[in-house]
Length: 162
Image 1 (tube, rainbow, N blue to C red):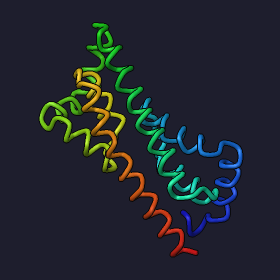
Image 2: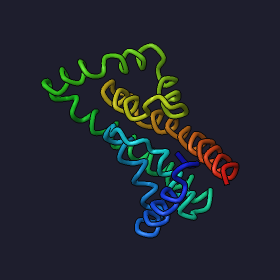
Image 3: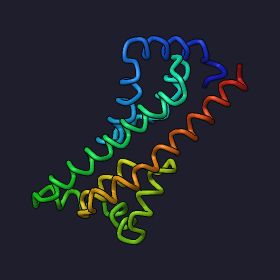
Image 4: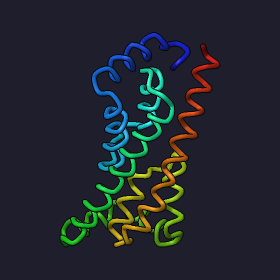
């Protein structure tokens, strides 16, 4: 997409960053992490890069948005899971994710934090299962190197394309 639509991507990114700044990058990671939206958050890494933000600024704000969003999803589901009707619905919808967490523990969250596996779903499953927040938060910090590596790959790719 960046090869064929680079002009459009640059124009959109420049406009997006000029309007929202770093908070736009943070929000682009916060919303999908908190609410499991079908928006690929890495799109906002591209926007930050093409919009002229420095590498570490993008990494910081994307990481902050992602970890805060994942924590919000964690606490929302933890709170909602106390209601019997919602608990039954969550049990049906999240049986695979909860099984993954039951089997692998926080390693499953770590995989969600570091790979393209849905981090938000792992956050929800941890919240539904009553995982303690401090271990959850510590594992969620793996989002920082994941975001840094993905941003580096995006920057290298965009440089190669020219």
